[in-house]
Amino acid sequence: MTIAFTFILFLTFIVLTLPIAFSMELSTVAVMLANGQGSALITILTKLFTGCNSTSMLAIPFFILAGSLMEEGGISDKILEFANGMVGHLRGGLAMVAVLYSTLFSAVTGSAVAATTAVGATMMPAMNKKGYDKPFTAALIASAGTLGPIIPPSVSMIMISSMTGESVANLFLAGFVPGFMIAGFLMVIGWLYAKKNHIPKEPRQPAKEAAKAFGNAVWALLSPVIIIGGILSGLFTATEAGMISCVYSMIVGMFVYRGLTLKKLVGVFKKSVLGSAQIMFLVSMANVFAWILTRNSFGSICAGLLKNIAHERVGFMLIMILFFLFLGCFLEGAAMCTIFVPVLYPIGCVYGVGFPLMIIMLMCVALGQITPPVGVLLSVTSEMQGIKLTSTFRYLPAVLGALLLAALLCGIFPQLITFLPRLLGTL
Image (cartoon, rainbow, N blue to C red; front, side):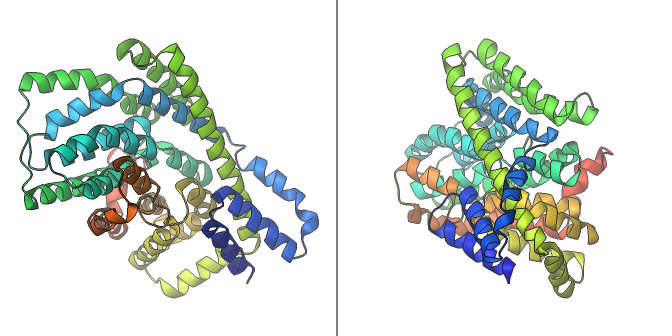
């Protein structure tokens, strides 16, 4: 009864448009007061501190800063030129370029909002001129932006690693196949749309120009290679990788692409500090919320229910996908990770899918970023296009279907997630 009351309060506060962090805090305090535990409220302060008092959490502000440095460092145009050289000449080429551009940008910055904003600002006007419907363009670019938390480096994966003890390198490797699957499905949607609406092909770029575009983009594309390669080889930890990524991003942005200036650095650091503070505050509040759930045996209740409903692995994974899809409509990735990873990871291990379950959760959270009532990324692209959010809904079944199909395939065949870690012998 206490757990039900906690969630009802939490969802009520969200419906009232309170920030998620405050919704978690107020529902926790209300439940403790209702249970006559007012004298124990001081414990909340302790839990707030312990929620982010972790060495591995240091990697989060570093990766946020590195992403901001690369975002402001002039890499957008270089990545766009490279993506256009690869797929721009195909049917639906501009739509494919948008998806590939977002995929590469996500691998560099690790940020869904940054990727969506950068890709949208560049690709939307071009796609509109070529006859792509504005609502379709908004839906496609928003769905491509969801790759930020899935394709490494990913802040969410670092959080999961700190809570489960799973290797950051394994989590990073596990994100590639699901991420590229989603990108591939979205490219197919772009191709089908262009074919149905008779969107003309773009001219093929000369080989010399394509090679030049790759040469210009190679410094940006090396960033995830250095990070993941260094972690896999054991040269540095995830936190050290974050610091190295910051130094590399600053050097490339200032001296190679020359898009980063001392004046811009002030804004970059300010933006990164605010972004890091928001995430850390949310993580701290989510730790308090998870504590009150654990205190009321939420994990045991979930385990008991799942034992009665799901008798084998596939059934368990399908139930988890439905569960994450529902919660992903209301919660963002950091909150989902902090609240449910400590509870559901051990249960997943009982079914032998603790590790793949974490990637499935990130994929479902990605779906929530383009699903009403929150749909952050869809709101961003709709606003950039100057259209109503509701006008994009007719295209949502297609793009949501692409993400959901990838999640279902990975849920039924978790080997897709574990393929790369096992291939490289790290899992």
